[in-house]
View 1 (cartoon, one colour):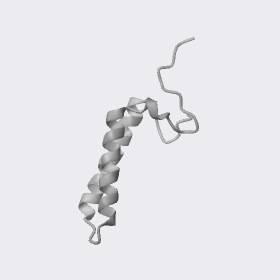
View 2 (cartoon, rainbow, N blue to C red):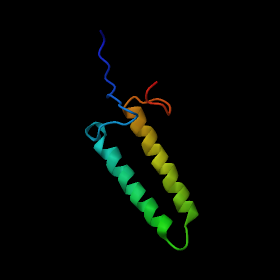
View 3 (tube, one colour):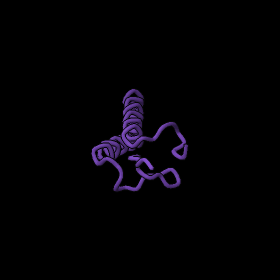
View 4 (cartoon, helix red, strand yellow):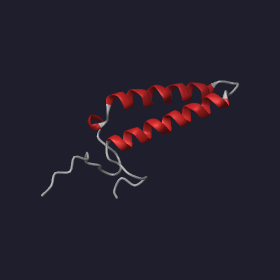
Length: 75
């Protein structure tokens, strides 16, 4: 039986120890900056849009690195 190198996915989530620490750190920093910008009285929408795009790229890199395809990790 061939070995599957893809981390086990349970209920759509990976265990924290299976997450790439670099991607997790970058994602956390981007989320903090986005939350800070969203609480500002005057919104910088171009910057907010840029952060959302960067968050998406980090998420896609994470999914690719862990062999997750599409939006349903159970497929």
